Length: 564
Image (cartoon, rainbow, N blue to C red; front, side):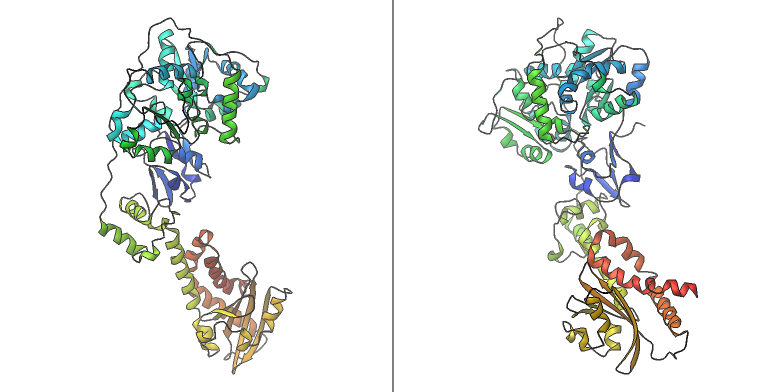
């Protein structure tokens, strides 16, 4: 079975949920902390590929297929999307044809020829549609999520398909490889109505890898021209927002009320939500990638979208404006679209409430709608949990509260007294064991520690001279062992106190104290500290601090105890 167009490399997935936040249609299912793409929900826009910081989202490679075609000895033509000039800019743009011929391509063309052709068809008086269909991600989105506006799509193929048909009309025996910045093109080429037009689709990322594999460097290649199959005109500007209108000679700016160009998933989806708004325009050019095709997911470049835009404009301005060179009749440019609507399970208020019960959100004040889980609201997240697309543990505030409760429980149940002081040595927290040991209660919160016990150790740490202090003291008839340490980043100080009143002092007394404390610590940490450790890496300082206090009970002693 063929791998999905976009898939997850699970070894790289680090449960950050960034792909969930970025996915415009929420086609990401999280299970066991791993984010998997539900192919039937995905529109192949590649946003997750561009956004994933761990490179866990990958576009399926077709490089081996392309290499096999070349190796077969068959005549192979390549159609290069006009956005190539943003990746191979300046003088390198003129060397791409030579580099492609070195890879074994017999004919090298610009897809801009197909773009010029379909622009004329899309804007002809006979075409009654409103929404341009050059972007396959937009088409798939409408088919799956907005089928009620299918009738507004202009029934014209994309530049890739048009150009592939132009090439095969001239050379029926030839195979065609398309190279561009788009993931959705891979699936578009596999649509039944496009069968046999494009044999292989590569991204620019794959092309760069192929060049590297063959040790072909553009700076060492000679400049050469693309073959000429059709008219180009301004179609080299096609990958920019508004580029199709420019190609068709249609003026479009913010003041125009007849035509509209829009890019970026959020803006496109907002526009397509309103049929009444769509009907107010004669033509609409939508591109799912923000800024246009120059920002596609199959594009690895350190340049930002504005620099790429300038590269495209510069190349279009200096390249030869080729005229029509085709002698054959018109190719088949018409196409159709089919409803493939995604059906979502209905979620009741009762089901949402049950999720809120589990995550402690029945009180509206805990429904923060923070978006950390990837969903816009707690309700949307709850619906995703019910549908099996999300996990309750994706809620960061909930997990923070849970981990804090667990770590607080560790401190609260400790047989050792624990106190936390601020930078002025005032008490901000103490556990029941500490209160019992020194006969106090929460009424003294905010008072200096010297009110209760000898604060010499804390005083020395306050000066910055030391970060840790250990001694045996007597107060209120209680003999106690104290371990004090500083949390410099938090500007706080922690004290851990063990009652040793019943221990008879001898030469091995300190070792006994340490062994006793470690035994107690290990007992109450055994089932709980592991959870706190796992959570602390993303739940913030307060949890990490509580974990550190508990862990110190072991760490401060274990070397000496183990040695004995």
